[in-house]
Image (spheres, one colour):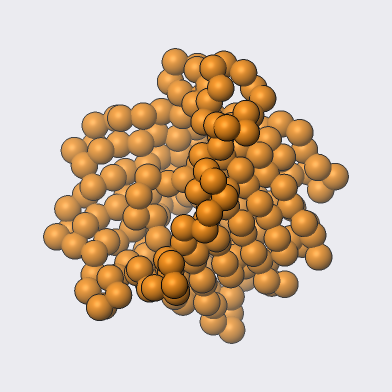
Length: 229
């Protein structure tokens, strides 16, 4: 469900740290999160000048993540800057821990879209097909990996099989995304971001992320809090 530009949290989390193991990787491993997590909340703030401290009135959105005991993401709920619910995602898995389908709902439980996933022989999710509520295809997303099993590129095509967006990612030795590039439909580079992580908890997971644009100016601040089983 990467239908729009990927939210900040999904760049350093969902598209990083995929470990090369024989079994299907759960979402915590994919997101480079340590410990047994059942609940997490992220607050995204617009930049407050060049201050590294978030300002409440600069809140952009809040996102709540829920994981099952197998470490897979089962629900994402989004709220706007006024803490009003906007939409949520539900993810289902097979007995092997592979995501089979995802649903996106809006107000009054209205189905907005759904998707299905395809995996390769290394149990990496390499393709997601997104559908309108009537079942018509509107988008396909392809993921490419490096030799360490980390996502390095995401390609998004519309229902006419035309490229609409391309993202590339660089990782540090720990598997966290430290830089991302966003390209338009003609592969023109539109944006470059770098990421710095701060304030780690006892499990070693970051609690604060600062995003910088290509000129080194703060683009946004993300606060992340985790609750463990």
